Length: 195
Image 1 (cartoon, rainbow, N blue to C red):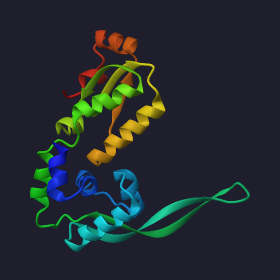
Image 2: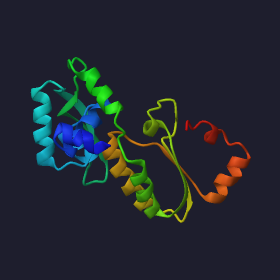
Image 3: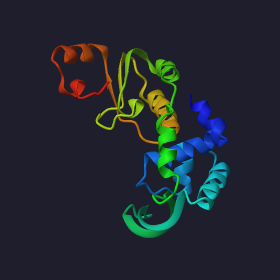
Image 4: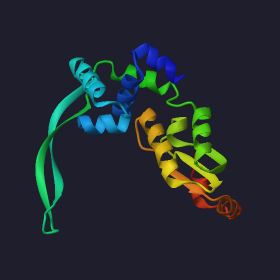
């Protein structure tokens, strides 16, 4: 159903960037942050940010950030610098309807996610929670049970999903044997997951 928003709003890139700001209303993002987190090419990111600024969906501001620099001597030095970034404009007149529109359209196709997760190892169980079911009460968004899970491949798949939904995913991975043991012991972590 994510295709509906892409068609309505003009592009997948636009949807990803809007979703990033809506999912992080207090966030401050540089152009590089937006490009990296939404997985959108920098020229396209610049164009979309310019458009969103022109309609006051986002506002531009400067923030002072600390940057750690490694000196030739091996020591590190902390340096403050001002960076230009962007944040959601809470006074945008159509913010509430826009949030509702995005909330009513599933951010990702769960079947597609399960298929992608299948490539990271021998997955036995995937439980969607938290952000996937529009529940803020869960500490975990995704629970995976399986064996021979390749962490680097899992990281890559999760980064792609995060780009689609606009926020970081909290997840837990159990080996099948560990999951069955904990399930038998009524593990608190498993009971806290809202499904």
